[in-house]
Length: 337
Image 1 (cartoon, rainbow, N blue to C red):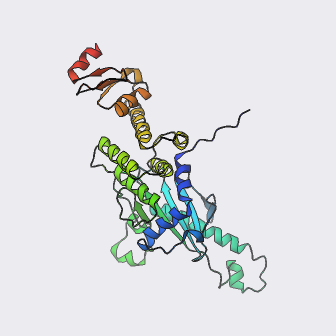
Image 2: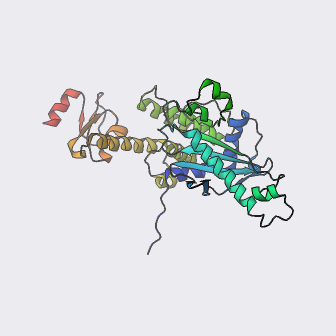
Image 3: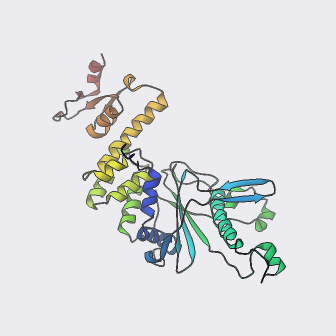
């Protein structure tokens, strides 16, 4: 029996990209230190991301772990003894309005794990004061701080909370006494990160191009393809870029094919749009006819999901593909009879 082929998924693709220490360090330096090279790639080590902890409050217990709809990469600086986390949502087109609480949960889970591991060392009260033994922690014990960065890949501006207090209705007189919890949020669609790693530069430049809602899809497509060709963008970046915006594409095909690149990405993205249109309208492919002026996006995209496609060939170009074509929309009436 043959070995089952392992499919690459968007979250795996994005995780694999950020596991690269050079790219991870460059990103954190850009966010935290305005591009100054403080964190070095060779000082980073990977930490297991599948940890979970239990938040205990009398009879109430809530499991806090790595949720399925998040991409979470954790590394530790061996020099600064600080844990760093990249937290990116898979449902990138959506804004999570409780994100500060979610980050609090992740960070708490990390600190709770450190506390539990530390407390397990103290089997007896030997060498401990009564307060220390009760706390299962010596006065001199210290934990590793955690820095979490949330990466938002949506095309809409983030209008959610960036701190706990943004989520609370606090009377003015009480505001000084309410503890806050702020998050580090990066919007991929528009940022001023001072990146040095070439792959990171390409990744965020492509994201900014694609997530620009002021331009039509055709224009962003052409800009992205032009950029990728001009800068000879690596496939790992293209795969990460498509994974970040949750394009429904065959990552294995991109990984294998020598000529796979941005054109493949946009063809598959267009296919996804046609599938979405069918789902929204509740129509079957054989009930729809699509007319468009692009052979690659319109005709190929519609045909890929079984929709009859007609090429709007306004300039009477050579029809080497042999597809149904018209030179103006009035001619479509004859095709529909």
